[in-house]
Image (tube, rainbow, N blue to C red; front, side, top):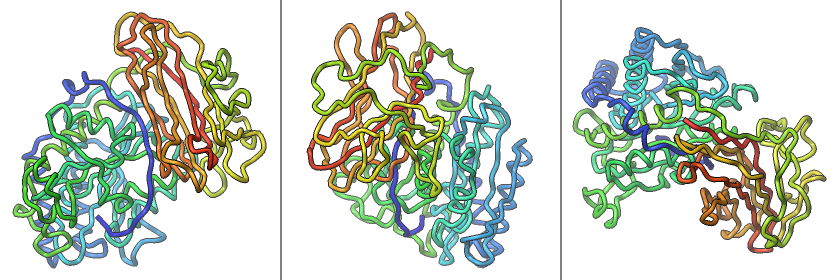
Length: 483
């Protein structure tokens, strides 16, 4: 993990049945990979820095393992932004799955020059590598496409992943529905941290730890400091697993997870970051199984049946201000497009987008005419009635957007609820002054199985509760599926 800093956002949640179908990622194999990276460092001057023979040997090891397992693997040279002489990224695609829905799993492959990087980040690289090899061995039916990445030059400033992310066309960016990062997952005094834990993809990882009774926390120490940050910057939704770096474990965390009130990793960026002394088997094992749960939940199995959907090419049947409680409703939500971008790569909204779609409300200062100002109030829309099947796993998936003005309140929110025979139940609430300030689109999936057989409506609300700022919000591509 590097010491830079950036920002972030949100994405999809999970079905408990996937916990039962997910294969084990063998700890023995993860440990064997970490040992191999240690051996490579020992044979090459004691480290695997991106510009060294130790890094080149690490690339060869990963490349050969993945190629032999049947992946399409490329060495992607970093031709701009990387340290002079840095080795390549390794990118591996598993065949099959919907190429328009890609989930990525990545880790940085380099170490600092001070040591071999057993925990930082052979632990993450070994986890992603063994996850890929487990996928190859089990060879499940693929619903969505999966890609694995091993990044160069992370320790010098996230350079390899930034090169990859910025090299993507807008079309290829839109295909990536989630990126999961694994950086320092075996800290010996570690905790259980999830990047953007409240996001949709974060909730997928959390579901695994919940299932084994292990409490988790937001990875605040690592925010913006690893290879998920460049993906956030281009609007791709991210999460990931970490066990902690140089920050000291608090008394409350000791009570929760055990260990001592000392650094999560006492050998962070030091020569003593060696294997096996500086890697926890328990945390390493759980990180691998959490990664597998995310992959199997999001990318494997038969495609679900579409029960109902609205892409808002021609939105019909939606009711504005359905409860009569809105304080700033100004008409039907304007249209936007989560796939459209400006020349700078920022997500774009409103009537300025050619061929746009999607329901949008709100306006940031200086935004184009056609977006609606909800300053000082609440705006809501409700879908037409939707009759759900009487059985099966039912999920609603949608894309959403929420951005705040500079004076936004922690009480501002975007909320998705289901209106059913027993009342109204919130499925998701995104709130807070710092949330999604940069305006990237998110995607989320939430279970409707509890309402099987009922006629339901979806209620979507956005609010500037403070009355002192401008908020822009929107929703697009709403789908209910059955599996």
